[in-house]
Image (tube, rainbow, N blue to C red; front, side, top):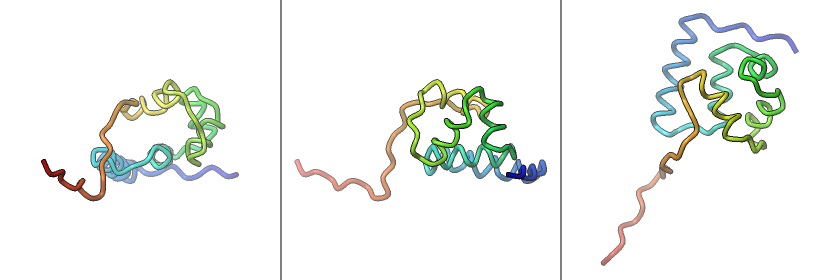
Length: 101
């Protein structure tokens, strides 16, 4: 498979802004976040995996949403972007119905 063209600095900055906006909004799944991280770097799965110290299979499975990565693997990937795995609130599309007392 041919290597993708790396994004320009301007494209990287735009991708990065959009990425952190979605992260802040809680509007991104782990597979989406990983694909976005790779898009920002312009690396293939194998290159990204080698750079982050995990196997290509780990990256592939996370992107498909079929993997069960360890917290250490996720932190290794996320560290490059100033992120780490943690407890985050679940945001619901609709507010929960109020309970009557």
